[in-house]
Length: 330
Image 1 (cartoon, rainbow, N blue to C red):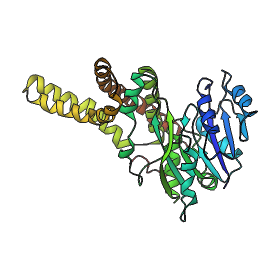
Image 2: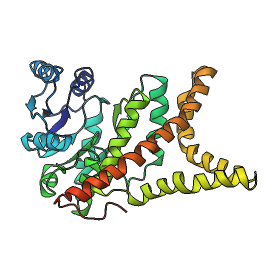
Image 3: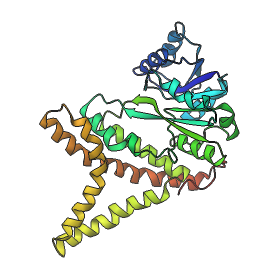
Image 4: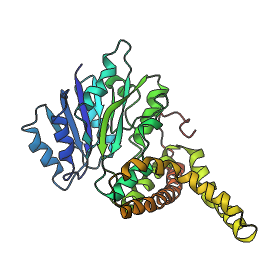
């Protein structure tokens, strides 16, 4: 079956080359590539057009100034001619067999409707290495039955995209997760292809990471996602944590042990993920990496606590009329 690879871009001149080059090196080349530019001002669109002249596959670049990522993806998929759609993002680097692995489940006797690939960090610095370990799940942590794919690495039938109304264009972040919910609720069957790997670079600075997680949490609030998870975070930082600290200071030093136990529980998973990344580093770099873990974790939690109520307020004000079922918050 013909497969169309789609992506959206916005001011990605410095990174779009990694995606385009890795598409050219695929063991199973795409039948076409459609990229929607949301209004780049750095020459990204012109670079893609120039690349298309010598690309080993048909490559179309479409301008959609002001389009958010959902609108861009919907425009790209609508323009795509293949019955199978593979979705990825600008700035990533694809494994050479990414598309081959992503399409393999469709060739089985009982093919699925949606195939979820996987994604791993592609760090360029010590900070990015620690950030990737702190925030991204390892493959062994994934339960294929409950895994909701990122649109960095996803394939689906175009008819499924059309049946659920496409990506939610009223949502600027977390749009791929809400899209996944809609596909599952419509009865479409998912498969997991862990070898369909995309490499992407984590945010390079703590400030950029804060803005990323603030926007993610704002998207959660807009879409009413993970309500209990956010409530637990508020309860931990604004209730349980201060209470244990007060008890340790004014009541009995033994409460410090319980506070320390909670801290260990909070940091255990990112520290376990970080361990393989520490190989080959100096002792100074290892100590720096270990010190960055709690800083990154607390920065991310603060960003989420600030962003979530902003999204909730937006939802209360705008109450978008949208087809998504109201079960996402669970």
